[in-house]
Length: 202
Image (cartoon, rainbow, N blue to C red):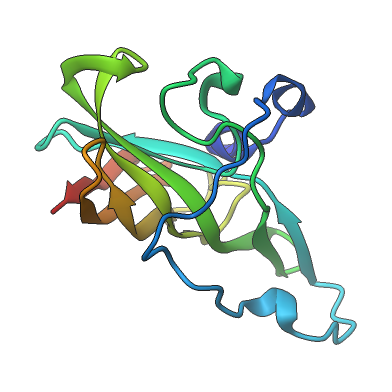
């Protein structure tokens, strides 16, 4: 299976940059501190390793809590929602691609600070028609054992997933802890399987 569809969530079309708002967003008090990542490492000349910075926009829904969490460095909905989410492009996050077996496989690692927006899709409100629960800056991590997906003759599973944490702020000004995890696998034998999709605020 070619897994380009799952990377659409990470794409940052140029058109979104033109649609973003004018107001900057500052991290709330208690937000994550800057941390080191592999972008700080010196280039050792290994042609199998590609490092760059880019944007992300990934959402998932927790079927148990009804919470939908979006993790983004760009305005949600192409800048069409002024009541939640980032209102302008934020700093990009670090990407690392590692080519394996003459690039037959490409392992992906993405990490950085993103704006997290959590809404309750079971309740009506002003955030894309749902009730805003909390939002603010947090830490995001995406891993994929082969971004190109799994070919039909390969019985191994392609596995990818996202984790995120942060101290967010409710509309009432309360600081809350957020933890989110989403993981999928795919193989030509078992098909696509959602392994975990959770979003917790407490």
